Length: 115
Length: 114
Image 1 (cartoon, each protein chain N blue to C red):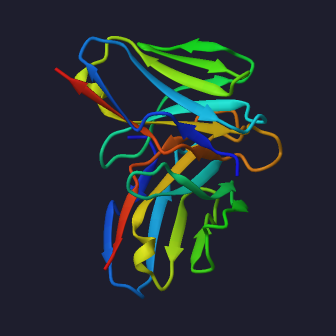
Image 2 (cartoon, one colour; image 1 turned 60 degrees about the vertical axis):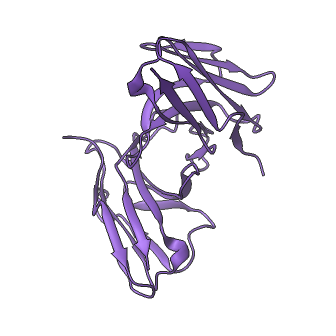
């Protein structure tokens, strides 16, 4: 079936460097994407979202890029901090189409920030 | 705290017992979702409600699982005759009606079936 996936299961980054977490999706009908951060023992925490009519969206220290041509999504974290260490999930939502509005998650990328 | 609240945080039960979890969504959100997450995996959709109506159920939701949201506010998820394979984190999320809005998750209920 169609799914959302991730290229790298673990990413190790030095404190202060920029992090890039990638995600591939296969459902061309997907029109809304979300990045979540999940720390151990906690629920997913919303980071940033992007709609399919956009290529880029910026938040505080985070940027999401969407390339619909190759069905690729990335999360960039600037000046990575130890508190950024967590598992990051991209999720796809097919929007308010009248059918089910639910999130399909990938398996996640673990970000490890080294000092 | 006005976020999504789940109770209990942890539940250990013997195989064959019934368990019930509760979720209190953000008060103005009319959509409520249940997900299941096993170790090392992303959350998997189980079911969702719009107000009190249950609009979709995943094939993961076997007949031993039932969810309710009787007054369109809090929701319960019951698992009957628990099996070891039911051990997982059960997450609840809520959002506004439109699908193009962020969903906020609770801290989850960690179920261990022994």
